[in-house]
Length: 188
Image 1 (cartoon, helix red, strand yellow):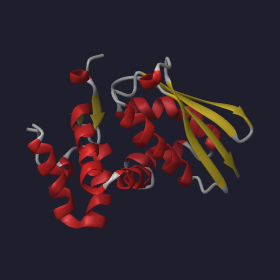
Image 2: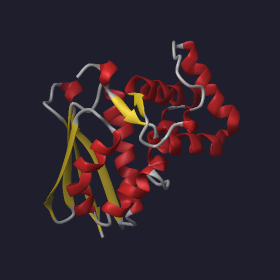
Image 3: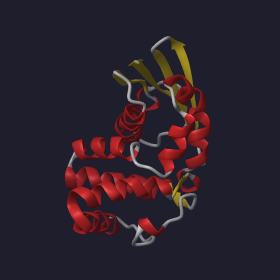
């Protein structure tokens, strides 16, 4: 699948924008839109008006995330990714599916396909307190899988109120592996 046909659902922006607004105000969001326009973005000027399932080019989402990184730093991208997983809306639907880490892993594929029209995500329990998530054709660049998805998965697990969690990106297509993989450990 080529980058032009890769789409994300508009809802992936909502929680991220809300967090930027909370931390930096309307001006903070406008800085990101300005960053995007300077780099050739010509789409809508307000992602908040997107419908939850409205398809948006992945390249726009990546440009938005790079704007956060370049303006506010990589720590903000990490925090924003974890926070996005904790907000209602898109994630609320996911969390109702994932009342336990085991169920989260079993439903990972369904969740991915609800909001992304490319790639495939698989999750499975390895043993009590350990599981993996594998992503096939889900990452056009290392930044997306190594930072954005890793932190997002952490945020989702934090919603489950577990005693201890860890998410480690163990394999990456950008390092020659056949798929991206995350080892997930938890203690209830």
